[in-house]
Image 1: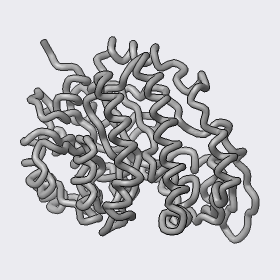
Image 2 (image 1 turned 30 degrees about the horizontal axis):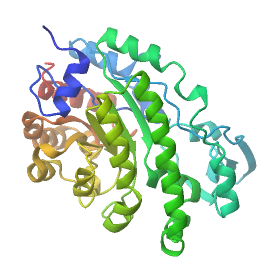
Image 3 (image 1 turned 180 degrees about the horizontal axis):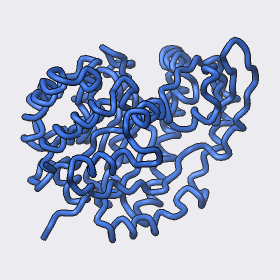
Length: 373
């Protein structure tokens, strides 16, 4: 019986044999697509489908993102507060006041449509009074939060696709409320308040997951948790154990009992000191394994074996360089793919310095490694 897309994803990330590794080269941002359209990608074409057509293989269906909504409700009104000197000062949907280049508008802050640099001016939670107001925006009983989940899961099963849900981990979420600096100060000066916020977020997500698992537990569950700089983690192992790992363990226990098998942590930056902590809490997958942040997927694979699977890990700088640099990079990651537990792909969003021709060359080599060519 031929493998489905769901089979390939789950078996790959749990170190089981597959006929092909899922083809997940990574996604371009808006500025990247603009370049690719100028270099031969037809306007209106899906870049993945166009790539598969040009390389000569059939593209399998991707994962099905279940319509699970853990965001604040109501959201803040998006407002432009000031426009001067080539910049906007805006209030985003999360209540933060930030400065962005005026070649973007406030809608770019809802989703990662492009590489948008922002400067935080004011965060939505600065006092306990702000916190009392913020927590009112998170009602786990809101019907809309799981609206359409059952139908989406049923359709995914019929199409042989894995189901996927992602939520903000406690560090990511508290940083959105207080800002990075505000959160770090609170961790040092008022840890009991951080305890309260982390416990609130853990309970809120757990109640949502209880509702979700009663309908359709996802195959692949991801924690959004950017918590590392280029060379170091943002908080200490002790802080991670206190404010992050209890959430992971509780959510994993509920999901695992309902049938979820992949628990994925998404964190940019250097993750070398974080991997053993994540493994300790039951996480078994990580992405995007940024090479520029001193991450070595070969070393990680050697060190942690089947305790941790990976997605990503291909240096975007080698894609941009092309030629020998790209071939050397693909040779570097190939042995990890052969061992299992690894879906190779770009180690973050594909930037606009990657040409359409170099992307196709990379995709061709990736498809060979993954067994599609």
